[in-house]
Length: 487
Image (cartoon, rainbow, N blue to C red; front, side):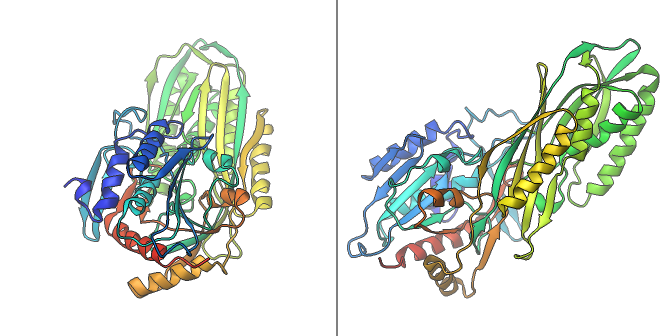
């Protein structure tokens, strides 16, 4: 069954349209153009700001002009991740979807790639509200931002005064039945080693080590689950080779997105010929240990080692310094909140390692609910790599979103949820980064809440959406909009 036949059809039809438009971060021009034209075709005001964010306006239903204006907010871009055996160009190819029937209900997946429900379903739901002829509403606006997944570019560039509404409904959280009133801030750590190459030493042989099969996932939502990080696993495999067996590093490449836990890594090393078998045995022994450790959460881990041709290696001890720093670098959860039970306070995702043309680049994403603790962790990362002789700098910082438990729209949403479903929603803070905290800088008067359907494993090819949750979420959004507070 195609996803367009799922209920509610309006939301799934709009989401299907988005799956046909390539929209990885950095490539949102086509989807932005589509959304502007889509709105104009329906008689709505629509335009792009200087950064490329799309803004759509729809006047209030007659008799609802006295209600506070609501802004429906989602981001246009998606994280481009795929399995190794999947041929897919995220800048050209549509997303293929499939429905998987399970005992608890249907789930929508993509076919070997990320689904883009983060945040395509948020965009689709906002479109469905805007095109509805039956929902009674006050003044409506939609804000569709660019490149949320890469440094929240659109949110940071939004200028004050463009939007007129009073209430922001962010449609980018990932558990139905939970209302989010706070989120973590973030900062990017950038690390750079310069290196020179030298010919493969005489009497050495090259080996390629590959780590695959990890689940990966969202570096905010799933950082607390203990999932394997391919770059950390690779550093663990390489350290004894370079330190104890006098091996030389030729290359190390792992991960490709800051906000995705790296699923795969590949390295090439050269070792003395007489140590090849011992090194292989050591890799296999460590691999067995790591597999056993990660089996409960990452049972698909595969580690291979094989001979390969290689003409050059990294000169000196730069390779060993890199691996030691990667080994020492803080990763995953650093601290839990002392105020909110179960909330991660600070974390780091050792996201990307890449060697190319004399430079080794390492990129991490640090998150934290408290700016001072976030920066304390960032200094730990800086110290680990500066001790190894690397250049380290930070950029892309943004603060978290502090909860407002006295929020009028929160009160409305709790009441409506209980009326619809018989129980109160959970009110939560989230360790992932939402755009609300940044948007509040330009619009401090906004009353903001985030909600969404149930998604699992965003930022990985295991990304999936729980179909029954979309219907509940859609029903809830409609009720909240119709019950918007008066001005």
